[in-house]
Amino acid sequence: MHQEESNWPLAEGKVLKEKFDDIFSATKYTKALESLRKLRLEKTHEVRLRSHRRTHARARTCTQSRSFSLKSGQIKERRLKLETTRTNRDSANKHQEEVKRAEADILDSEEKIRDLDEQIRVGGCHT
Image (cartoon, rainbow, N blue to C red; front, side):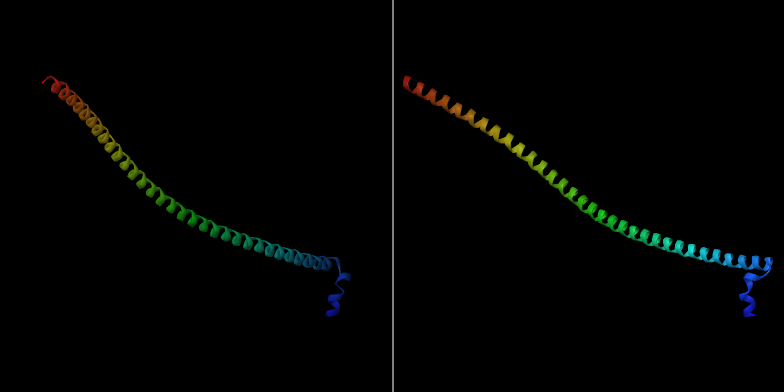
């Protein structure tokens, strides 16, 4: 039987054609398997790459979220400081107006005192 298998190149056309078809079909099958292996490797690589990208995207999102929270807190703090500063400014402006009125009152009083002193001096000499 082994000898018959080794003489297949000398066989009839039909047997020879079947043998070649078997060989080339096996070659096509082998090529198809190799193509499937390569495709599997490529897809595995793509899945790993996408997983890696997703992990980094999540990390960036967490970092950005924390940064946003910090900035949001800083904004609230600065708004509170701004409101406090405005309140202090308004209070200072009110006190400044009170001081201006008091100074004006003092100036008026000093002028009245000078006028009275003048009247006393002038009136004291005629008496």
